[in-house]
Image 1 (spheres, rainbow, N blue to C red):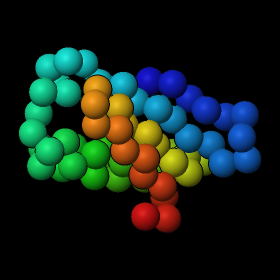
Image 2 (cartoon, rainbow, N blue to C red):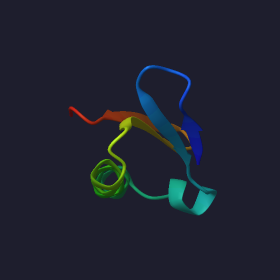
Image 3 (cartoon, helix red, strand yellow):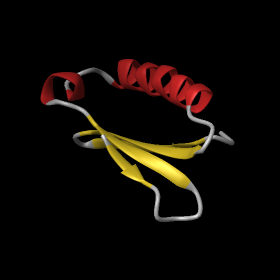
Length: 64
């Protein structure tokens, strides 16, 4: 987990292990939605999250 707080909009980067990166695309998408929902609900200053599952990388914003 890496926090990015130097920019106007605060965010974080989440890197996952090889075991988690081996999930299929549907499981990755579901995981991203659940985790982003929790983080945005708990951290009012988080505006974006980048999920890194090895070859699959996706950025989610609070607005989305």
